[in-house]
Amino acid sequence: MAKAEPRRWRGLLAYMTAALIGALAGSGGAYYLFSGVVAHQSAEISRQQEEIAQQKALLSGYEKILVLENRKIEVEQAKLTDQEKALAQDHKKLEEDQAKLAEAKKSQWAQLEQDRAKNAYRPDAAPPAGNKAQPGTARTGDCELRSGNIGDALKNCLQEFNRQ
Image (cartoon, rainbow, N blue to C red):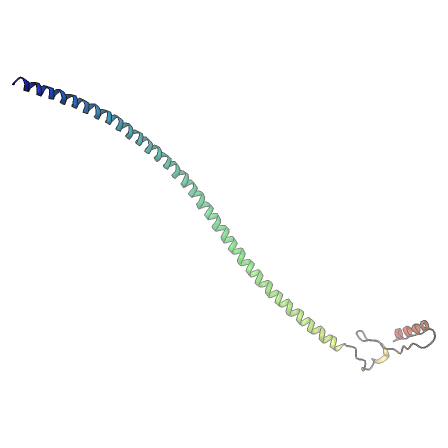
């Protein structure tokens, strides 16, 4: 029976050797596959980092453009504010001028009304000396239409009116 025992150890040794060789082959294959996956992921990460760097560069270019555009907008807004202030001042001056103009028209109308009241025709007033009509006063005359020729009566009336 002593001979049977070494055979068991030999068989076990053969199995262990085959298992060890299989484990080493499997580990090698797993390492190869894992290294391929890691290399692929590393390449993908590098590509993404390059893409991010390009996008950052592009973004910084856009940021510069935005800063320049914002400065232009600020300058334009300042100009617009100045123009609005000037427009408000002009509008205020225009309102003042319109108020002055309205007041001047009002006083002119009042003066005109006073002048009209002074120079108004009054039938009860005596005619001026010399029976000459003054500018602004109405002429009066004795112009009656009598029976007969109306044309002659109108001519006489006009002649008398022009003499006054």
